[in-house]
Image 1 (cartoon, one colour):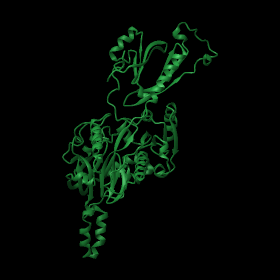
Image 2 (cartoon, helix red, strand yellow):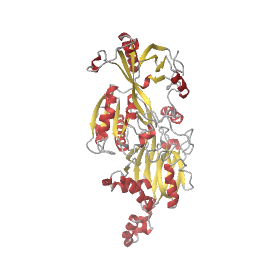
Image 3 (cartoon, rainbow, N blue to C red):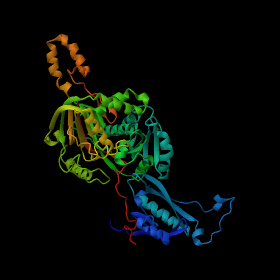
Image 4 (spheres, rainbow, N blue to C red):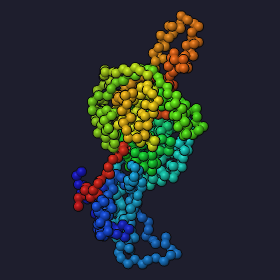
Length: 554
């Protein structure tokens, strides 16, 4: 990066030690001018520990002048008489900034600079505020929805105690709505909300709450633009407002995939600094009827059966997923059907290439450029300009489509570790019929570092569209013809359709769409590239600046 000219440079005091403080349009840096032998010995561990600090201007939350001219807060106690100019400097200002901690977490940190005179103090405060005012990507007004019932029912407490103070410190105004019933936020966004007043929409809750916000915002955008959501051939219009997620749910896999943690403070800080992370959305249809949007996982077979069974056990709380998972694994059901898909082409990689989606992902950036080119053409569909479709028939234990890694605490790598957030594709995972032991081996690999696709019964493809038709629907017309000649067999045939023990007809599963059950088994899915944008930047691998003073013109 090219060195930036200084805006200000002064010797100020931090904790009674003199520091050279430098501000340019990119960073705020301060370096101790008197380094002790003890600190010099620690210099091998990095400049920060040796008394040098550096903060990108874009990660400064706020700055304010301290109101500490009068020493009355120590009244009633003996006070030390100032012995040096350092001790007697009463004029100070405090900078609140982002500090990185372990496991991709952020926190607010403060540093107070003491100035020899108030004019210098005001100059620093005003100059930093001017630089912050140039950051036009930062939100000023937010619409916040809080789900008080999701996860451990701590959504409102998390917002009030951890998030609201940060928004207030950053001078962000909020309109807070506590949802009262299912789809409250979705319906409000679609019909009542005056979106022109806001710079973003924030949801406090789990993945279900995020899905509700996403559906409301995407549907509102299509309605305003006159786009028919029921048509598979329509090119959907990207949403103009960014979405922020304050995690307060059970899994929070969207936060894990876009931020790297499920820490509410970290997510709030990403919102404050105005980060942007585009994301793909899958539209799910049944013939000419729109069903739902999916942002993380579409699962048929195992994951669909787990969700269906767990819905009957909601009274058990989060433990219902473990019990339903064990029950579904032991039942070992498989389902017959046909999967057809349009493979992704170009430089989009493969699900097994070990290239993980991280902040500044080159694969997603390339997809963004390709999207701009394709927008210059007529709306692309027509089966993605007559691409070659692949058809696979068989018996499957699970059919999964992962549009992101789906990582969470129980599955650190996720269902598809190399899935990308914004490349316009989804990873289609087909788990064919196999023994219980083999399927258990496959499931266990989601919890360790082994390749979960390295099995003969597992196939994975990177696709832009896919269709699924269960066998019972393929055979319906043929069955009806047979039954018309033998009325007495109709009753037995109905039993066969509903109970697979007789082996005459495979039972059907349900699709798990981001934690919601779809009403149809035969579906058509299309990926819409970068349809929404989150207040996030992807998972960071390295610190922003390794050398604090590398970007200062000293």
